[in-house]
Amino acid sequence: MKLRDNRFAFAAVLAGSLLAMQAHAQTSVSFGRITAVRQVEVQDDGARAAGTLVGGALGVASGGSGRSGSNRALRGIGGATVGNRMAGAMSRSTAFEYTVLIEGASTRIVTDQAGMRVGDCVALERGSFNNLRLAPEERCDVAGATASAADQQESDACTAAKQQLIDASTDADFDRAERRMRLLCDH
Image 1: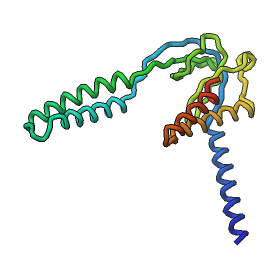
Image 2: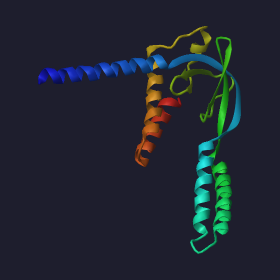
Image 3: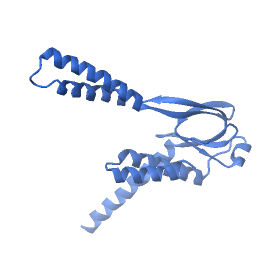
């Protein structure tokens, strides 16, 4: 029985190692300079569709059971229109589009991270999640600077924090994960 438990423990460690190697291989870290910053409006079409459905349902429900079918239909259409407009306004948010020059090629990334300016040296992390963070000036002064093990660990910690935020199931878990993500991803 002990041998079987050891095999399961070994398999779990091996699977964890393979996942860590896969995550490490999927995230790349490049260094470059910001050449342009632009404020953009981001729209969440999923929120708009949900608002339309909820508004329509509320409109139909407000028609009451004693009302005619056409009255309920009109209220449903009106509710859907109002729900769509409200959700449209709520689903829009401001973000920033950064253009980063990396080894002669420009890359654009849209993020809610504010405070970075033209000329800043940044690390661009690309993988299952993309991230942009300020980097030491010497990283941009050397052509083709490669990410160190510490850079990769920071990137992996940020990716794990973003996944934890997505996986949060309670308000407390979400708040904790959001704080962790801000600490690990926004510096």
